[in-house]
Image 1 (cartoon, rainbow, N blue to C red):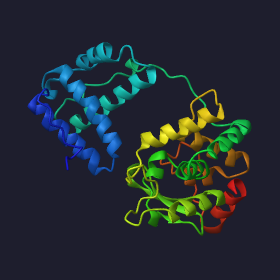
Image 2: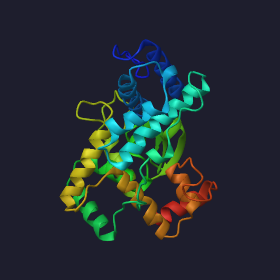
Image 3: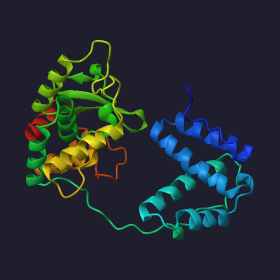
Length: 294
C-alpha cells in the first residue's frame, strides 16, 4: 500500500522533495489526519514547483510572488488556508535550520475575513428535514439521526465500528482530530435505527456505515446524502453534516445545556472555542443530554 505521507514528484527539486517528505512525516507523527496531510501535500507540491529553487534559498518575495500569481483570484478564506499551510511549512524549515528566521508569510498578505455565524437549522427547517429523512433508506436515516443528535463530525461518524457502539446506554466512542477518542451520546430514535441497521448487517464486517459495495463509507458520500435530504426538504441552502453539528450545539444550548457539556460532546480542543471548559462526568452528562435531545 502506498504511503500517503510520501511524495514522489519528479517536478520538485530533489532537495526540496526530501524536506517535504520530512515535514509530511512530522505531521503524521503528530497525529494529523490523513485528509490534512494529503491537503498539505497537495498545496506544498504546487508551491515548491512554482518557486523552482532550493528551499534553503527561499526569500519572502518568493512567497509574495506565489501569493499574487496563484492565490489572487481565490476566495479570501481559501487564500488564507493556502497561506496558513505555507506558513506552517516555513516554520518547520526554520526549526530544522533549513531556512533563516527572516523568511515570513507577512500578515498583511492575508485578507480579512468577515465574521460569520454558525449555520444551523431553525425549528421549521429542522421539522422539514426530519420529515424528508423519513423517505430515505435505513442507513441514511441512521446517519442523519446520528449526526444530528450526537453532534459528531462526519469523519467521526464514518469511522465508527460496531464495537464502538453501546446501544443500551446510547453512547458511541468516536475518534476525532489528532486521533483523540471521546464518548458521544445519541437519541433513542437513533439507537432504534442503528439497532435495525445492524440486524441486517453482513457478518464479515466491523464497520457501522457501509457503502453499496460493503466497504466503509467515504465522507463525500455522506455529504451528498445530507445534501439530498436538504433538497427533499425544500431548503433554500445546502444541508451539510456540519450544519447538523451546529444545529445540535445550538439547540441543546437553547434548552439549557451548559457550555462545558457542549464542549465535551463536540470534542473541541481549543479552550477559546467555547470560553471555559470543564469536564462534566457520569450521570450528569447523560441526564443533560437526554433532557435536551430525548
